[in-house]
Every structure is written in C-alpha cells, then in structure tokens.
Image (cartoon, rainbow, N blue to C red; front, side):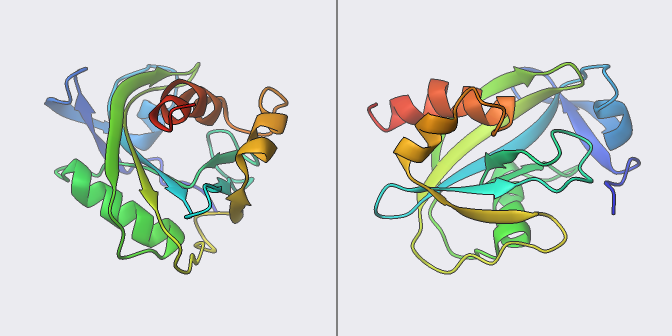
Length: 171
C-alpha cells in the first residue's frame, strides 16, 4: 500500500486563500509549498486522548503515534467538509461536534502545511480504518507526558499538543 503521489491538493497562502494546485508527491518532496490539512484531537469524557499509529507504508513519519485524525484537504473542498470526511474515513465517526482551536503553519524538512486544528469529546465507538491507520487507542495525559521527547510521537503531534492543545485545556 502507498499514498497516491499524483493526488492533487490545493496550494494556499498563510491565510488559506487558494493559489493553485500541487500533487501529493510534489507537496512532500521538500519544495515546502503550503497546502491545507485538518487535524482532530478526540478526547473521551475522562480526558483521555485518542491517538493513531501511522502505518509503516506512509511517506511521512511511518510507525509513529499521531493525532487521532489528520488529513489533506481535497481540491475544492471546504475545511469543515474535509474534517468530516477524514474523520469518517479514518475513525468511522460520523456524528461529532468539533471545536476549532487554531490554524498555524507547520514546516518539516519535507513539507509545509496550513494546519486547521480541532478538538471534540466523543465516547462512542471508534472503528479505525484498516487501510488508513495501523492502530489506535486512548492515552491518558500522564501517559502522553511520559512519552514526549522519546521518538514515540510525530514531531508535529508533539508540537501541536504542547503549544495548542494543552493551553486550550488550561494546562
């Protein structure tokens, strides 16, 4: 299994305005052309955070634990629609109420993403996609804290969790 290198993504500016199109392969080849993504952090009512384990075949951060749901915005798709689509595809969740947290630019050695971050509280069933994810489970806040900085999580998750999610929780 592999990602479709020819899938088209929108190119955007720092404010999210559409500028053109780029293929997945080109978006991830080090050119660092800004493209939008959505993230959802799924908490249960006890405050535990659901994380997904990225499959080994992924082109970015294979085998690492990451945000419950994250995905690219399709060409012509609204952010809210991309979030609903990605959450249904990756987690099998169709009814949830997202809360917007922030939007920021994330840059790695291979790409630049305009990340639209959301959270929700959800206690229903989660059915991780067998083709999108390797595994998923809820982690306690203490368990996450014990693994920060130990190469367990993607750098993007660690940064987003410490800079945006914890402050949003008042921690």
